[in-house]
Amino acid sequence: MSDTTLPTFRAATEEAPFLRIALIGIAVAGLAVLVFAPLAVVFGEALREGWLAAVESLGHRDARSAIWLTLTITAIAVPLNAAFGIAAAWFITKFDFRGKAFLITLIDLPFSVSPVVAGLCIVLLFGANSAIGGWMVAQGWPIVFAIPGIVLATVFVTFPFVARELIPVMIEQGRAEEEAALTLGASGWRTFRTVTLPNIRWALLYGTLLCTARAMGEFGAVAVVSGKIRGQTATMPITIEMLYNEYLSVAAFSMAALLTALALVTLLLKTLLELRHADQLAAIRRH
Amino acid sequence: MHIDIDEIAKTFGGTTALLPVSLNIPSGALVALLGPSGSGKTTLLRILGGLEFPTSGRVLFNGQDATGLTVQERRAGFVFQSYALFRHMTVFDNIAYGLRARPRGQRPNKAEITRRVTKLLDLIQLPDIAGRYPTQLSGGQRQRVALARALAIEPRMLLLDEPFGALDAKVRKELRQGLRDIHDETGLTTVFVTHDQDEAMELADLVVVMSMGRIEQIGKPGDIRAKPATEFVRDFISA
Ligand SMILES: Nc1ncnc2c1ncn2[C@@H]1O[C@H](COP(=O)(O)OP(=O)(O)OP(=O)(O)O)[C@@H](O)[C@H]1O
Ligand SMILES: [Mg+2]
Image 1: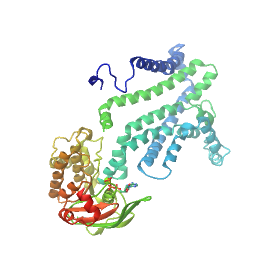
Image 2: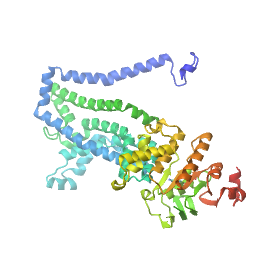
Image 3: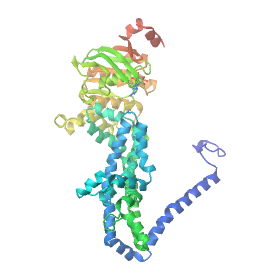
Image 4: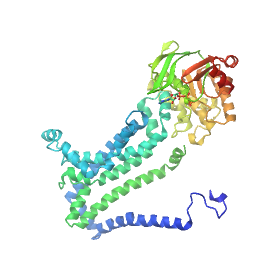
């Protein structure tokens, strides 16, 4: 835009040079303080007594159990929420019905409710003193202070991520392509698989990755429902807190570093996928 | 295939889109639904294609009740107003979509699909664009690809919603003739929606003038020009 204007004029959206430098400065400083510094500290603290001590602390029985538990919970919660998210977004964007705005608000609920409160609700609803919880305990399948409760808490807290990524994309794309597929003889399922899903796959991927990172890191709700039983229901974030409170700082930060690394891997995956499909992505966005 | 529309009405919640309307479309005709914005043209077309179900009334294909047929069973070649090409597929895959969606027993093999897609690309006079994505096409090219995609399923009828709406005057004229040629070659019963009276008069065998959910007049272009049935038709075609 600017090459057609005289040097003394600025494009309407361009700021004065000093303002631009100040804004960039603030952004970089903010990133440094809020993102890079904590990352550096976490890894620094973990490696304070060397690699060996860090790795050894992660090999401890309780630590291994925490890692395994977190991965298991994530592996259950994320696919569930991806499916729920697709279903909710599909329902909201492809059909007209009363109470749509209310439903969209409802999807956001887990973001506005404190995770601790969510955890307490699950304890009240499914605890040993409740009707459902009591029955489940009698069957030998307790929910609270056990894995099902942790899954429930994680699913609740991370529910909005996928749906919220999908809804704007699906609204923007409308129904025309799906309708076209139907007129061409495709079944509803085939239409979903060959038209809807490919059109939302980037939003779905992004939502799923955010959901994964959050599911691994969830603390508040899980702290309430898990009972923090070491070696049984203590997830990685909970183990980190317990180790830290016991002044086992190398162990605490080693696990924190591992958790951070897992989150970074999800981001790296996303970036790699985006790079690999850059041309396709551009073609879709230009439409 | 001849199509009979028998007292079809449609309401959306509180709004009436179509009052009961009746219309007989002879086999092989090229029919224009002409009317101002909001007159119910798209609604009627979508009811024919099975994308919308009427509140009351019946649709008959070749004299048989087709009101309950699903959109897939109708086998209508539908061209959407904004073309609705699959943006993540090449032109080839777009056109082949309907053939690949057939049940296994009726699905042509790979070579046959390629042969048919190539033939359709020749028909729309764009033999070299098979590998492109919709974003890499001009508006007129997209329109023709959408037409080829609709024809690929060997439809029983062709339904087009403002097929030339988004194009400039020169391209419109060219494509008009293109549609006429394709219609004459395939002999398909064809219904298209337009709010451009020149387009309707020049292209169609039969023009259906609509206003506010009603059919004001049905007739040959010359008859409608010579004898407008209502005040509305007179005003609309002289505008
Ligand atoms: N899905 C819908 N929900 C509610 N009302 C609708 C819906 N579709 C159409 N209508 C209403 O039905 C009436 C007829 O609409 P329709 O789309 O058939 O008009 P049209 O003749 O195709 O107009 P245009 O030339 O602007 O496309 C309009 O008043 C419209 O607001
Ligand atoms: Mg319309």
